[in-house]
Amino acid sequence: MTRDKADLDEEEALAIPKSPQPAAVVEDLEDLALGDDYALNPAYVDMVIDAADRGDSDRLRELVGALRSEDVADLMGFLTADYREEVIPCLDSETLAEVLSELEDNLREEVLDTVTPTALARALEELDSDDAADVVDDLDDDKRALVLAAMDETDRAAIESSLSYEDETAGRLMQREVLAAPQFWTVGQTIDHVRTAGDELPDLFFDIYIVDPAYRPVGAAPVSLLLRSRREVTLAEIMEPVTEVTVDMDQEEVAYIFDKYHLISAPVIDAGGRLVGQITVDDIVSVIQDESEEDILALAGVSDAGRDAGVWDVAGSRLPWLVVNTLTAAAAASVIGVFQAEIAKLVTLAILMPVVASLGGNAGTQTLAVAVRALASRELNASNAARIILREMVVGLVNGGVLATIMAVATYVFFRDPLLCLTIGLALVINLFVASLAGILVPLALDHLERDPAVSSSVFVTFVTDFTGFLSFLGLAALILL
Image (cartoon, rainbow, N blue to C red; front, side, top):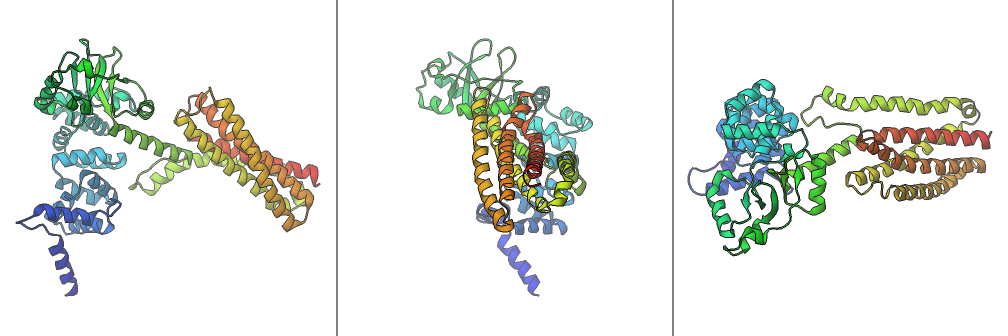
């Protein structure tokens, strides 16, 4: 009886009434769904699951309909595949399109398998060409052909054109919808064109690109400036210099240009200099976030298997570099085998040598993280590399000296052996110096070889610090103590 009343209370509190103030109720549902930090509330996810378990499609449509498309995409990540199949039919074409563009890649591939080619074609026609091409790229060849065949000819051509460019380039990132006008147009003509062009214009744009007769961009007029200007003024009088991006430019380079010049949008040109599309800041935010996540994961030697990944997928994403690390660790440990006799004579060495290696590893990781970030943000290059390397060498010596003093005092407190204090102190100075040097030189070398410094630097730096730590401490012990 109590349970029935609680269920009734929940339904009365959340149900959308058939007459007055439906908007207010939807707002209440959204407030219930999201916390103060705009993250989905676990209780709301449970309500969606409960509605799916009961097969209550009306209630499910009501719950999902109260969310923005970005929140629906987030919800998909908390649901299993079976529940996602229940939610997808509750989405109209426009919402489905927006959700597909927001989904994580691994989830999107799974969701795409459950949507018919015709429904998918209708949904993709709601998206800008860049987002639509991103979704189509995740389809297998057979389904891609069916979806493209079901699309409007203009939309299909735009997507096929985008897919002809290499992945992670400006050509793939750009949207083909763009507002361009000749120099002799007046502000009034341009505004009238914007009002009448309708669906031919991009959903979101910040600049009008001014082009010459060959359709090459010669300038840009921000919308804010256009609206403040008199109708009789020509675009040539108000246009500003424009920063162009080529179709084959890597998306990281594009992000760097946007960050450096504080751009909101930029025209994309082909090999002949003709305007073929534009990139807007919302696309760049996604690129910066994706590249940052990729670098962070790469520094740890893993890849993102996704929230819904199985055990074997997660294990497979982490195992390769662990295997490499095993080999480098074995090589570093081989140093210990060379000094077995010394360790047998003085067991204290076995207690202290991991400390030297560990502190060196931490110091190397610190330098490595700073170096990789500096390379990614173009703050470190050949012009200042020598100065940065020298700085890190000095930092290594300073930190090594401080830690050597601390460890020498601690060693004396526990073991009362001045020579042992001297040994571990010298070893720490050597290892932290080498760690700082390796932390800056390894990523620089990989970058010079046109390899991603974030991917494998940590393995090599760890090997160097472990090898040097064991060798310096045990070698000095053999010379000083035995």
